Length: 404
Image (cartoon, rainbow, N blue to C red):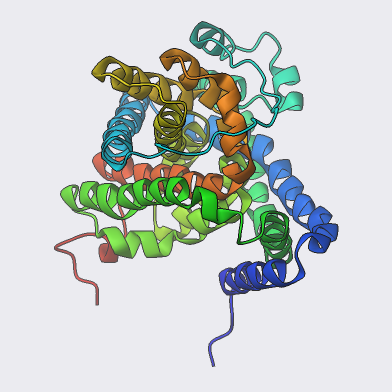
């Protein structure tokens, strides 16, 4: 009999958590700290993992290759982001989502003011890299790791000890990821039981249409757009998705792209994508690539506009697409951050910000789907960019190769 692996136990924890949460209800929230512990353990890995793997990975690139990698990474993220916006606008536009929805008395929700795009750009450059590492500011960490890696490559032999240290740190972090994942089944059980126990299955009824549309858009992106692009590049899509399935499943349960990064690094490496490609593409994607979040923002904005009786024009749809795409870049990879950036989208089309209170109660349920797609896009980008850079991928992932 085949031994159940860590992913199997995590799936068991996921299903049992839903069942227990539905049966026990709100009292089950007493186990919430077990889920929080799991999230904290994963977040513990994020900063050293991003810094060590990205700096070590960039240090192996020449200037020309580094430029190509940056260009291809951002081209992919904007290509899939635009596709996501088109899907979301079509689905929300023809569905009439939100029309006749009972707005009622809005619940007050404290939403932080979203940063301006200029501030997002300026904040990428850390004034104190050590402080950024301590605070976990991902964009500045990525910037510093990239320029440090470039400097290591430029210095050459004299910087070999630093390069070796970063590579050793990255390997140690991979091993630590494996240890943390064995706690995963307990953490996932607690997260799912708490979510279902808090909201209950009945909470889905008034919001069923909105939730359905968000899940439908994300499903089309996941099972339609990504496989089509992989097939176009000569990669067997569903074989690859099967190999990296642990990553979007983790993202679905934790609602955190950043916390899932260690898992993404491990599964992409296990699928056959070289370390240096994973080390560059995945940390970038965990922060600046949020297809699922962009779709959620677009659909939610149209839903709320219809709920408030605001007539949207073609100009409004364009604004929704552009702002959702740009806002998704600045969305932190942590649970609930989408609500902050949604306020930016609503403000751009004149929808009352207070409308966020309508959907805040079920945001986590939608967060699960959009985070899974965010992470899936990163893993798909990794294998495609690797193939275009001449990485040797396993034969079973490529069309025209023997799978014997």
